[in-house]
Length: 316
Image 1 (spheres, rainbow, N blue to C red):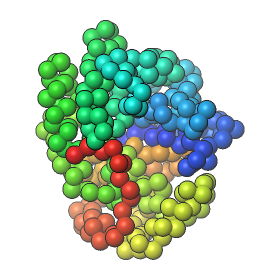
Image 2: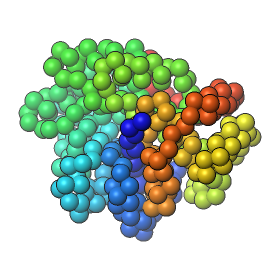
Image 3: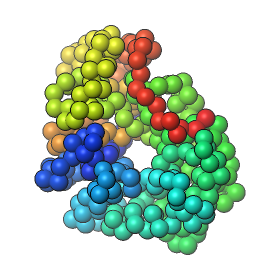
């Protein structure tokens, strides 16, 4: 099985959930370099990543690290950002200035631009105006492809048809996809459509904010502490299965959880902040789950009474 791993950067600048501090930027640069060294081929960010005055911090840091990366290495990797469809970003040109800011923060290395979430629940026309804006930018000479995030199967089909009218196609779709993600059947319908249309299916939060790593230490914020306590007893059977596979394979539970994602042909986007975690997760490139291991984990997942909260702006 040919695998790809994506590096997620939500934590790069997020104080509330991840306890980001600027004095950790050197550690993040080491994480970035180790990811490239270990074969990560995709890096995902967003213009909204960064708390308060640090808005855009993830893109800024990534752009700084990219400026010190060889052209050969940059050509090998894909950099994707997500633009937030805030209500004040209005009309067909609503994404132009945000795009240009992201483009410059990322040192002009930008391969995929994604709509961060769907507006179909509160302003159904807005997302089509944003998509038109991205098509216009491509027609104006900017070299990137279009992606989506937090989209459901019905809306995905509409967007594929809409973009076809502009002679454009989707490169990627990313949704929450893990052993604890809500409405797994819906996500698999999205994946089926992606397979039919040759669209990369990206899985964000494959470790469910770290819960599936089974590491109860260093949760770094009150919000994460609360989340770990909430799930502590409700996933005992799943914990047991992760531990069985990890001990048999002599790998970490995190590798097992991410390999569950890879087994289904998805590209996991794993949020990482430390070099040591990159080294561990890159181990998934060396082994695959077998069918019985996958089914054991799958059955344990279905039995979990408590799942991760879904994105409220995910479309149908």
